[in-house]
Length: 123
Image 1 (spheres, rainbow, N blue to C red):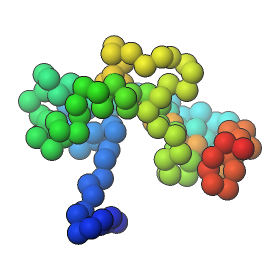
Image 2 (image 1 turned 180 degrees about the vertical axis):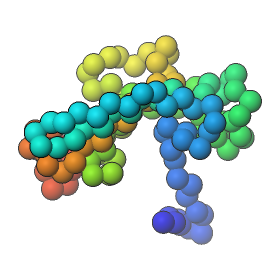
Image 3 (image 1 turned 90 degrees about the vertical axis):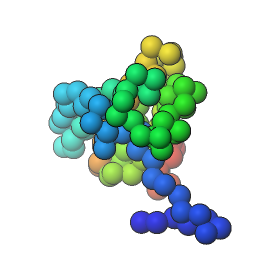
């Protein structure tokens, strides 16, 4: 899919830097819950200050403030991002965690438990 605004094509942004060889995908956990599955996948993205495998385009997107702002848990419902870049009350944002990302995938059978409505917002 392409998104073009005023003849400018927007680039997709991957908070997990999956196409970067220095990204570390840690062991994923799959949980059976209420006849559904929850997949939890932790990542550590490379530090742009010390990594030689980050290209200029990625480096521009990964300023220190952006790293800090986008650390945390990314919640996906049926492969659609519904919440991003915070620790959901589990931790406070901290420079020590700025390279940490956790992807949680849930299916639509868990809408009531996660209090999601048709707009994928909290009820």
